[in-house]
View: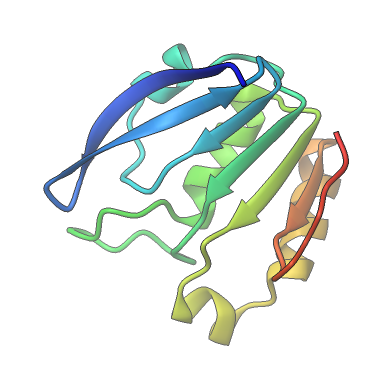
Length: 122
């Protein structure tokens, strides 16, 4: 298995990494959005997994929000994006499946909301 550590950053005083598997699957780890993601992340992966914890950005909370996920998907242009790692607010105030459909329609890229035991063929 070929795994490339794309970019590191701090997340609650822990070093985390975005990972690129087999030059096909980009995993976007927990952390805050940084502009350098748009430069360092590989473009047009087959699948991009995005930890989308927050519905809206909360100052001081080191997690990606829905707007961050939208920006990443729009700029990285994966063939398919999967939103995962939903926080309480996103689950209780919104519907991840509806959000995924709206993002798909807006961006012209297939976006799915992760589910327990979900399998995605590559």
